[in-house]
Image (tube, rainbow, N blue to C red; front, side, top):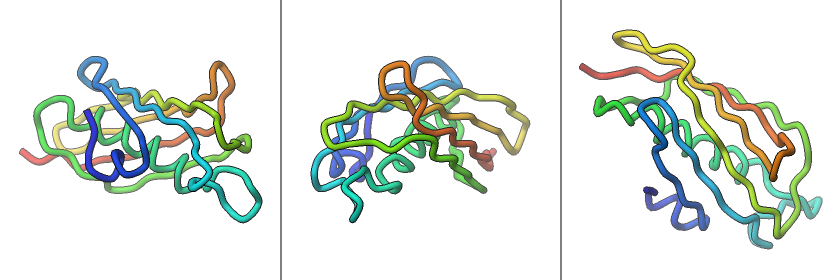
Length: 119
């Protein structure tokens, strides 16, 4: 499952279960910044896409209220990344998600996001 922006960046994704999703992609040369490492926007988008899939997996439209990301390690062209989103809290109107971005077993970034859930 993917949206047009994910497709443009070469990313793919799937809903694992209600409240959980996974996205993945390979860092291409056009995803690099001026330092020659992956642009933070690529890593962020991978995490954000997993967040979107997980938060909309209950069949109720959800939109982001706020997000935050911590970058832990640089990423190079050719690196295969995946993001796993997990629901931490779901209320009647809002929900909180945590996303881990990994290169294999190595953690690259932590992302958290709140959504508003429409009735």
